[in-house]
Length: 377
Ligand code: GMT
Image 1 (tube, rainbow, N blue to C red):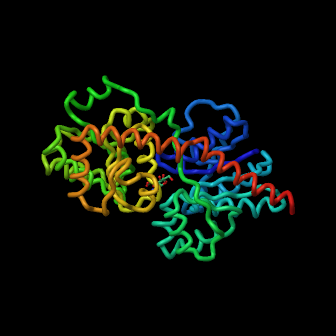
Image 2: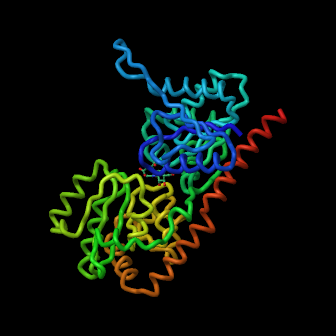
Image 3: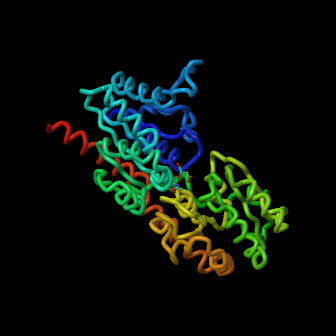
């Protein structure tokens, strides 16, 4: 198949999933065309069968804002025509599903089908904004198929948009050969002494990630377990997290590592992932941690319970329940037998339930079913 993919190119789960999907499809022999505003962060070096079409928006003094979305829609239309795309798979309703709708209007008789994957913020945040609701509805309703990355997100979408087409859940995935338990003793020693545990949090530091909860959990854990905290990422709440670290006198035990594009080795260096989010449609970092054999302590928000099996591959609590999260983290880090059991179960769950090969096959079947239906018309 000839498949177009549009996604946010910046660091984040949706971009990671879209890019890894594209790479895997290309590896299986499909022709993959990324239609993007920038090269996606996980694309890396040259890949056979992958082509990048980068938007170049002109600015005109008479216009108050650059017309990014319209330029992207036009680029989608051109790519559909010139590359004879079978599928255009967009990741996020806004703006991509709407751009795809416009592109379809511009390529009226073309057989290309649009698949929209919802990743979370488009529904749990943007769709709550009345000024955006109708345009999101349009993007969803005019897609040929809509998928969500968790049952929780699919249900929320059906409630918010009762007239939307039925939504198929295709969970996010992980490559267990990339996210695997390997020892990095030198890297570990950069962050902690041999008798210290390493707690890890990775996010874009938006308010929904509750990064200050991470610090508040850590302050309790380090009182009972010799440990260090690594905070990876950047975003609006970084200042609040830094202030809290100072206030709690934790500066010598907490490292802010900033934005990191390659995180597999960081997971392999850690003992525990903290994910206390307010909203989380899936929680890709939780899956990547589990695949690396790192248990997760977090909240029961959104799709996290579909990823982390509570009591088996980690512990989940109510959002904001810092006391219980701290107790569970301490329990895990001080009970070797429990830790080993959860570490092994996490990796096994990642491999059996969320393997990249299985999920890519699910997307391929969806594409084929859309093209079959089109062929029969
Ligand atoms: O979490 C974010 O703020 C980033 C966002 C994104 O666009 O990458 O993540 C969303 O999509 C990921 C991939 O499907 C999911 O794993 C995250 O749970 C989801 N974030 C939220 O729902 C807040």
